[in-house]
Length: 231
Image (cartoon, rainbow, N blue to C red; front, side, top):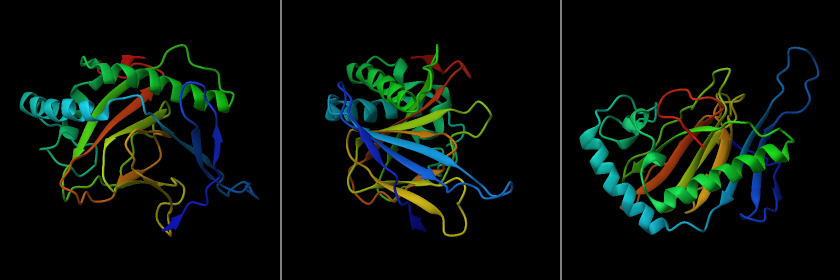
């Protein structure tokens, strides 16, 4: 693997901390058959959420939903049927009443709008979200997977709620096999990440007893199913 030679920039935002742009970008193609690409990841740190309270809420909710909802698939993460991730299709985390989740909605919208404004892309009239969460315990990891590659795929994201010495690795979609180019992102409490859903990603193994908790979501310009809610 080769670490991404980062083309990074930061912009100031009056409501949030700086936004970091991480870009997988090719050189200009020199003939009609050569590949040319640009893939975008953004990172921001959200401090104004009580992550201790949110962690307690999610661990309690995890037990309730695992009892209530039968597993379907774990989204190719490798976490299996015992995980809350294997129920992700059948609930939307943002439908639950919790003041920290209410704050999160605002920050997701701001992160989304920052990204589009930076690239001078008009903001959409409607924005929909499907949201779930992942809990990793000692010995567990998330395998390489992709959120979406359909013609209408859009943006995915993560918020790190609780973690210790872990990382998420993002893979350049155009170079996944021979010496893949990757971006290693150190997991930090409060890190809010947006990425194109076609970017493969995975985590390293959870080696601590304390759970690694993350909130994950997909954004869409249309309501793909009943679990997508409007932001």
